[in-house]
Structures are given as structure tokens and as C-alpha cells.
Image (cartoon, rainbow, N blue to C red; front, side, top):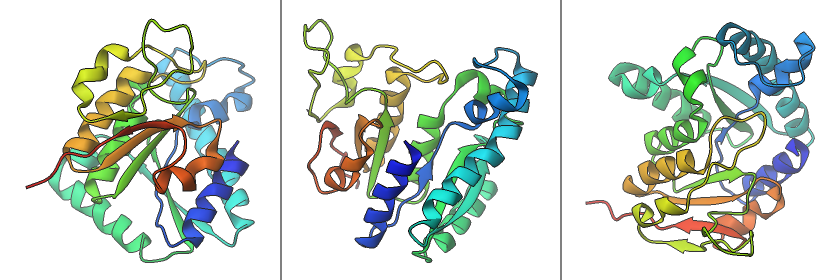
Length: 233
């Protein structure tokens, strides 16, 4: 899946777009280090898995991006890095400088090995919205296990809402779809969407099972739920 994702990001990069990847997966990538098959519930073990898995996760990204002549840069953040004024400015400076180099893809993750509260809440979606807001991104794309925001009470499970002008009007559609290694669901994603669109950033929820459509999504096509940005004063 990461191979297909990095291919699409490389295509975006070649087309002149600058992409920041906010990734989850550190805990999942660290399970095999300790012979685990399921996500642990003990906070200490979660942190240990994150510490072991983060290195493996970045190695996987680095290996796949290298096929396209791209390098990676890692940023591990906690909520304080996006709320404390001085630390927020430091993160912005780092990302701005990285984006000056087309051949480098910044990869952001929560610092799960120390961020106990974030491990309990699991808000990588909110992290991505915070990063997008921080750098004044043009667009935020949230990839998940479903093709978009589904309407509730319909027979066709793939019947999704294609365009949303007011995110608050669709919160009641949100279920708790999530994978066995993840902790966030659609409600968390809609909260992240609201943060981004309120900051003037168009946001899309689409399927991570079809990363090949990323260039189409950027161009206004593809399958997913598109949330219109609010105009900024």
C-alpha cells in the first residue's frame, strides 16, 4: 500500500505540487518487534511499539521514495508543538524550509513514544489538520478505509456524500469505521475537517485503498467527499 501511495505522491511532486505526508502506523509497524499480533492496550507497551516501529516505518517510506529519486525528512510532533506559540513557529520554519526543496518529502507523525495523551485519543487526523493550518496548505486529503463520508441508513454501503458545504450538517452521518490497528474514526476525521475548512482549506476524505487517485483528487476529480473551504476575511 505504501508503494502505491509513494508512487502517487511522486507523481504529484513531478507535476509541481508540494506534499507533506502525515502518517500513522508507527505502533502497527512495531508490533512484530515484540511478537505481537494486535495493538496493545497498555500505555507503556504502546510507547515501546511506537519507538520501535517509527524507525521501521520511516525506513519503508525512505526505501519506496528513493525509487523516484526523492528523499524524506521526519518530524515527530506532539500537540504542544502546534499550540505553544514558540514551538509552533519553530515547526513552521522547519516545514517552510523543507518545502523549498522539491526532492524532499516531509513526513510527520505524532511522537507516540512520549505523547501519552495522544496515544489514548489517537488524533493523527487532527494532527494533519493542525499541520495543514500551520503551513496555510491549499488542500488537505484524509485517506481512510472507506471511500468517503457515507450516508446513514442506506442499502448501498458505498453511497457517499460527494460535496459538503457545511460540515456541521453532516456530523450525524459519522460512524465509527476504523481498522483493527487504528484508533480514530469518521467522527475524528470530521472534527479535523472542520478545523481545516474553517481555516480556508478545502478538505477531502477518500479511500486509502485507492491511492492512485490522489492526482485526480487534487484536480477536482476522483471518488471521495469534498468539503468546501470557508472564505477567509
